[in-house]
Image 1 (spheres, helix red, strand yellow):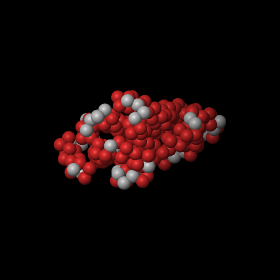
Image 2 (cartoon, rainbow, N blue to C red):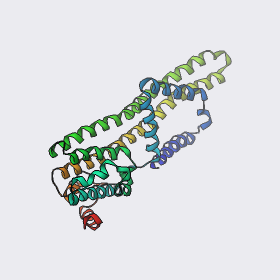
Image 3 (cartoon, rainbow, N blue to C red):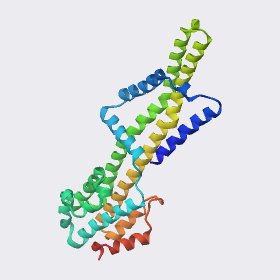
Image 4 (cartoon, rainbow, N blue to C red):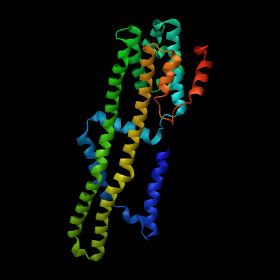
Length: 287
């Protein structure tokens, strides 16, 4: 919800400064300028992207506004899930993991960790990495390369809505100029109506330029950057999963595999090593 605080600051600072200078916010409300700028921006979206990218952009924008990035507690939950799964494989053999990996909806382990099950792409990524390990179709040292390729593909796909929104943001100032030029053309046809009418139409035209720049740099580009930040967080989760699965496939103990994965995390979300070890050892699977 911090993004809403930022939006309020942007609006309050702009309108507050305008009013302190003696301006009346009502004079900024020209419906025609909103129609031109927002309508053209929507048209650019339709022209520039396929339907599935626009749908994904809507979902990601909603998540950027209402959601929050994964925190330290989320990564701790993820590491606990990885450890518990690995312990089952270590104690009972890889064949014991088959019932969990092949039927994740019925797995009692996965059911305890919504940080993974609540995000289908994370669960699918983990399952895709574990299946070759269980089936023995590839060598252990090839798992990381396989999962890296999938991770990069997902990251590239997630970047498409960001590029689309950045393109719209970069276009909006020019769209504002288009709206302003249209307003000036309209003004020229009203010169005979007198200075007051001309002044009003010029003000409306300048509002178009203001609106294009304001929406671009005050909202669209910052939201695009926030979506990209959330995407990087999602990639970090996938990298954590990949590192742990790769380590386990190479023969590391569950504790070491999870510890290696922990060290790939940024300091802001990285659980403390001693705390993580104590937590894992206190789990039933660690006894």
